[in-house]
Amino acid sequence: MSRWFLMFFFYSLAGCGLEKLYARAIRSPRRTRKCFLLLPLCPVYGLAMVCVLALAPAEGGLVPLAVLGGAVCTGVEYAVHLFYERALGVRFWDYSQLPGHIRGRICPRFAVIWGVLSAAAVRLVQPALEVLAALVPPWLTFLLWVVLAADSVFTWALLARRHDTNLLALRAALGQTRASSQSSTSL
Image (cartoon, rainbow, N blue to C red; front, side):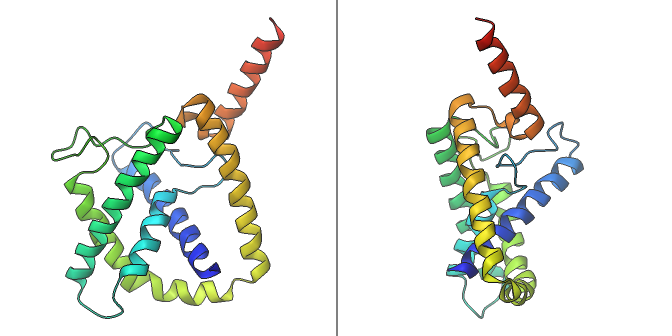
């Protein structure tokens, strides 16, 4: 169980890094986007890769692996987007400007990208990651669980109440909290 958690954590962290690189490459004004208040994690990446790893055959070609990875990652992306939208009233991404999109949640361009990235991760990154994960002591895994659980609770509460992903920058969230407390004390 701890192996799967560590894979989720690592790929969520790597996904946040990919998001920052992509935002920088396209000169996006939102370069600090992430999905948790404190931790630099994008859980859709972690969840998608855990699903790919669970379903990927041990042997086989890169093309079938990329097709599987693209389909699985895109399915997870759609489900996570739907969950965020329905449960928290937020949207972390919107592909509605891209051709072939489905409700802005998924699109063919990124399905291909997810396929290539997931196949590369399974064949190139995962073997080394397995070695590293075996070196992580149980106490550190437990600590990561606790920190992630606490951050999840705070993030969920903030998003459910404010429906604003821009508040996931800690400075913005603290400013919003101060503004709310000042306005309530002035009444």
